[in-house]
Length: 235
Ligand SMILES: NC(=O)C1=CN([C@@H]2O[C@H](COP(=O)(O)OP(=O)(O)OC[C@H]3O[C@@H](n4cnc5c(N)ncnc54)[C@H](O)[C@@H]3O)[C@@H](O)[C@H]2O)C=CC1
Ligand SMILES: O=C(O)C1=N[C@H](C(=O)O)C[C@H](O)C1
Image (spheres, rainbow, N blue to C red):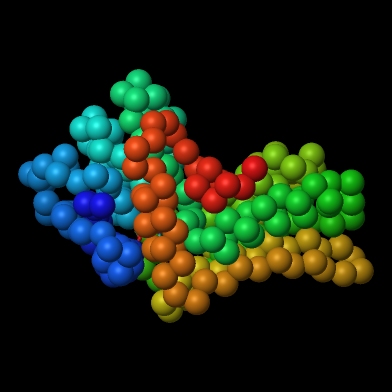
């Protein structure tokens, strides 16, 4: 496959190595100063750019009929517009807050635990995410997906809040920025007598990058808006 990388930072460079090792050609490496390029030379584009750049990159791909995978976080106020455009143009698009297989299993574990805890009002849920100091957005996209997983499956919560909660029905998410941490997420249920924690720790960026390349391989030839659950066959 001919792959365009939209964003050639930490993730773009990791994805390039994995794409080449799987037999693909990286035909475009687009970063902030590249404004004039022909996206149609690629079979598929993979966007890991900035919150302010992702929506423009995604719409450019859809408008040019190039399937696009995006892992950029922090731009989701425009997600529904991207979905509408993709459906109107009969394009192909996948966004995931986290492309790693392990986190996608963790998302399912989180939903199951949230359901089990729904009737146990003595437990309060909190979340913590830890990332490197260069990360621009907070809370992480993954923490937002985890919070949404609790809200959909546990009637005690209907919102999330960053750092402090003023609302009893909101899930507090604490965001920490430390060194070069690739990504750690903890979901914690605490009562007066005990605590249950589930935790995912990324050891490096390889899992995110491999998942994005696998998603790109899966997307080519399809029409529609998809999720990592579609790629991984998770119901
Ligand atoms: N969904 C997932 O599995 C993962 C998502 N991410 C997200 O991916 C994004 C990128 O992360 P990193 O690579 O660590 O960041 P980074 O800062 O290392 O790379 C982003 C690159 O995008 C470039 N850029 C700026 N404007 C651009 C434009 N208009 N078009 C293309 N590139 C442009 C920047 O110059 C930079 O080189 C972040 O939003 C991060 O949260 C990161 C890891 C995993
Ligand atoms: O910025 C990062 O590095 C990461 N961002 C994603 C997020 O916001 O959830 C995924 C991963 O945790 C790494």
